[in-house]
Length: 236
Image (tube, rainbow, N blue to C red):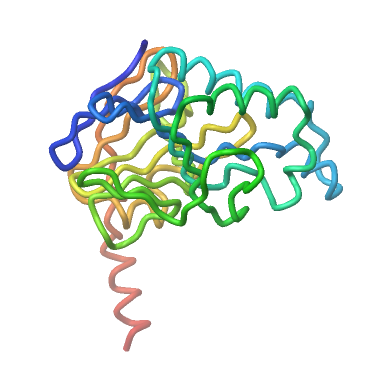
């Protein structure tokens, strides 16, 4: 399985090309921001009409990661449903897939800001979880080391004369911010605030895809002398 090694609080983790995070020592698989039912939610609210296959595609990719890693525990880091009403749009085949993936495993739905977490899809619901030295929550907080989601980080790189955009993990010595796992989810530029504010100097990104790779996170350029002078004048 394509992966890239990450160390957080002395723990050896594997960032998978799919956007999932594997902790082999704890037999744990972590995913974030599944946003199941996004196509249905957009159609329901009069938005763009998208092919209604993203829930099935997201679950099939998760099913493949579970087969490859055989975890004893799975943590979904919030926004597992695209909104509170999205549960009604999940069909019987998808429910059956979720049931099969949960069989014999401890499955934790962390609550998100889009949804309070599904309470009738098996597993258990929690605002946060702690395993060993690591905390797991939807939105990055002050208690570190932690693993969180919410921001959907995405890297933009110039490669071979073209700009490539890839979902990515962001990590430093204190935290890992997961990429969105859902098929139709967008992304926030890896240098944008608040991601730039959360990541300390020396932070790295792991780009997802067929060949996950680690790259340094660029720091935002300091303001020019002219901009600094304008700021000082404005402050006065």
